[in-house]
Image 1 (cartoon, rainbow, N blue to C red):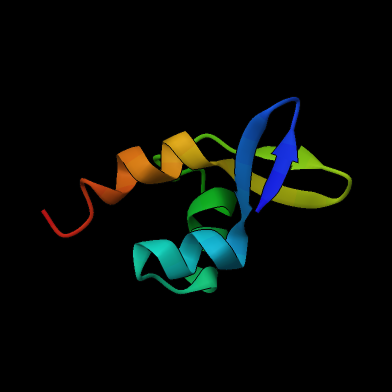
Image 2: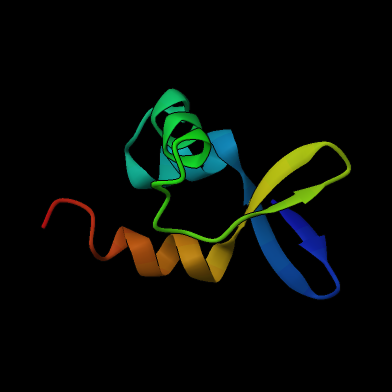
Length: 62
């Protein structure tokens, strides 16, 4: 987990694990602009806000 300006972020692998998806699925969603979650690029890393991941986790599998 990364904290930037008091906000918590997860990297791609952490996000994938939390959602029960593969990292490749998240990468594909991003590159194809199908990602339902916002993300930021910070110091060469793609980070997902924890609040976005938690919100999306509630919809996975529906």
